[in-house]
Length: 557
Ligand code: ARG
Image (cartoon, rainbow, N blue to C red; front, side, top):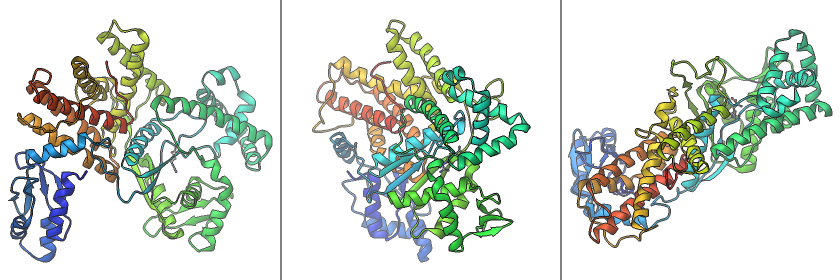
C-alpha cells in the first residue's frame, strides 16, 4: 500500500523535479497535508515561489485523491483528501496484515547497540532509558522490514575487576550473594575501595586476571554469570531480548591488533607515552593505549565496529546511550571513518537524564542510585492497587497479570513519550494515570474496543465492501489511521519513539470522539458493520503500535 504522503510526493516531484516535502498540516482548517518543497526549489532557480506553486498545481493530476489543491502563503500547497480516497485506502489497510506499512526498500542491515550495563553493578537509570528506547527502535526497524541485529555491549572487563577479586577473596558473604548478587558485589567493591592499603593487591590481581590466571578467570566468570542472571531477570520482566550479548571481554584479545593497525597506517601516534588518535576538530584525542600499556573503552569500541563490519556487514550501527558519552562516540566515529574502507553509518542516539520530583537526578530518599529491579516491582505494586480497586472481584493471579502489564507498560511509556534529548521528571502518579498521555490510557482504549466486540459476540469483522463517513469524527479518525505508516518511518528516521506515542495518544482521542458521536452496535446495517470495521482497525493499530513500543495490551482490565 502506498501512503497519501507518498502519492502526493510522487506526483508533485514528477512536475517539480525537487523534493516535495509533504507534511501533515499543523492547522487542520488549511487541509490534511502541506507541500513546502516549492519554496526551496524556486529559491534555487531564482523563480517566484508563488508563481511556481500555481503553475505546479495546474499540472497535478490528483482528482481521485484530493480536492483541488490550494496555494497558500509564499508558495505552500495544501491538500485535502477526498472521503472516497480515504475510504478506499482504509479498506486496503484493513485487508493488509501489515496495516498498510510497506517494507522499507532497500532493506538495510542495522545493528542496535543498547542497554550495555556494567557487570557487578545495578543498572542505573541511564541503562533503563537505553534499554527501553533501544528496544523500541529495534522493534520499529524490524517491523519496517530491515534486518535488525541487537547487541548488548556489556561492560564486563576493566580495571574494576582487580578490586572485585580482592573483595571476593577477602569479604565475600555467600548468603548475601545468593539473595541479591548485585548489591553484594557492589558492597565488595566499596569495601576494597575504602581501604587504600589494598590498592596494590588489587592491581596485582588485575594483572593476574589479564594474564589468564585460572583462579582469577574463574572468579571473573562467576561474577559475570551472577550479573548476567540478574540482568536477565530484568530483561525478562521488560520483555527485551538481544540477538547477541558480546561484552567488552569478547574483544579483549583483538585490542593489540587494533592499536598496531592504527599506528601502522598513521592514524594513531604516540603522545606523552600514550597511543592517541587526534581528530581535526576536537581538542582531546581518543586514547587507544594508555602509557601503562592498558587499553580503554574506546579501543574496545573500535574493535567492536571492526568485528561487526566483518561479520554482519551492517549499513548502520546505532548506539543508544546517555548524552554524556557524546564526545566518546564522536572520537570513535571519526577514527572509524579514517580507518575502515566504506564504513557503515554510525549514529549516536543520545538521551537526557531522569530527574526526581525535586529536579535533581533520580535517587532513592537516602541518596542512592535507584535499583531497576525495585523500580519495576514498585510499578507493579502500584498498578495492582489500581487494578484491585477497579476489579475487586477478579481472582488475585488475574489482577497480578493486569498489574504487570500496566505497571511495566507505564514505566516504559513514560520514558518513550518524552522527547528523548531532554531530561524528564519521573512521576508515579502521572505515568499511572488512566487519562492523559500514558500507557494505561491507551491500554484502556484498547480494552474498550475489545469490549465492543465482546458485546457484539464477535471476534473479528470482515473488510466492508464500502465505507461511508456520516460524521466528521469518522472521517477524521480514518485520516489519522492512514498516517500510521508515515509515523513509523519518522520514528526510525529521527530515532524518536515519541512520534509514535504522540500518534497513538491522538488516535485514542480521535477514537473517543468518534465513539461518542457515532453509535456502533445500535446502528442499522451496513453502517454497523462499517463502524465495527473502523473500531477493529483502530484496535489493531493501537495494539501494533504499543507492541512496537514493547508495551503489551490486555483484553480486559
Ligand atoms: N557500558 C557502557 C556504560 O555503562 C555502555 C555501552 C554502550 N555501548 C558501546 N558500544 N560503547 O556506559
